[in-house]
Amino acid sequence: MTDTNTGASSAAKAPWHLWVVGIVSLLWNGYGAFDFVMTTTRGEAYMREMGFSQAMIDYYLAMPTWMWGPWILGVWGAVIGSILLLLRNRLAVPAFGLSLLGAVISLIYGQFINPPPLPPEMAMMSYMSWVIVVIAALLAWYAWTMGKKGVLR
View: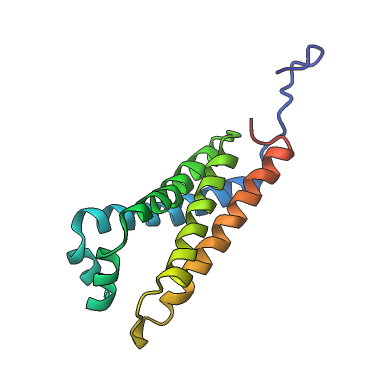
């Protein structure tokens, strides 16, 4: 839409931080996508290279089939959301929302329904699901805020 008197666009100008958040988000979520692809295609060999113990490998290989849905939503919703944010597309908001939904379901499953046995050297991994949910929530909130300000079209 343009103003017929000035010819100016009615969409708000993108603030500098949109580009910073979008690029950092794409890098962060791009690594998640890389990890997803490597885990699903190389499986046990990739997990060994990443330093997973046999107990952790067994846990991931025994993941119920239904958990693929939240994992896919979390990873690919975030990647798509990051790209849409950089394109200033309003669909970034629901994409990040789906990503957050997938992350929350994964957190609930991994922390409360079926927590993995973690060896002492991987104790920090128990916090990673929480970190992912917080980042997903912040990205969803940021995209929603940019949408409300008219930055996303």
